[in-house]
Amino acid sequence: MDPSIGFAQIKISTFYWLEENFGYNIGVSSSQNREELIKRITDDEWNIRYSVFYVKLIEKEYKKKFLETISVSTLGALYGSGIDYEKRNYVRNNE
Image 1 (cartoon, one colour):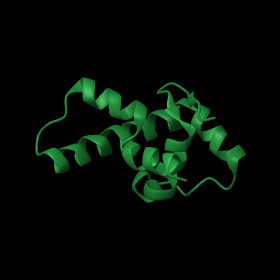
Image 2 (tube, one colour; image 1 turned 30 degrees about the vertical axis):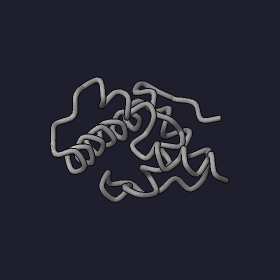
Image 3 (tube, helix red, strand yellow; image 1 turned 45 degrees about the vertical axis):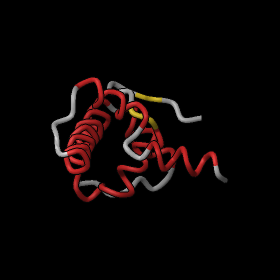
Image 4 (cartoon, one colour; image 1 turned 180 degrees about the horizontal axis):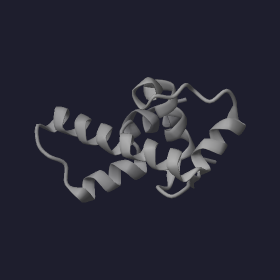
């Protein structure tokens, strides 16, 4: 179960992934436990901070891969599925 939570409807797994891989860019350390992570993700300020960083990350990675500016509809699709969707889907289907 991986619900989307908070103002920006960010998935718990995405929030955790951002903390673990980019926390230093956002200026935070990783949550010490799930309770702390849930507290952060339900706080509007934290939720928005992470989602804005995630949108910028999607935009940057898309431009690097396709050499063009991302459309709003594609950005929205990738925000919902995740920028590593293909890898996650591959791992999930080939476990």
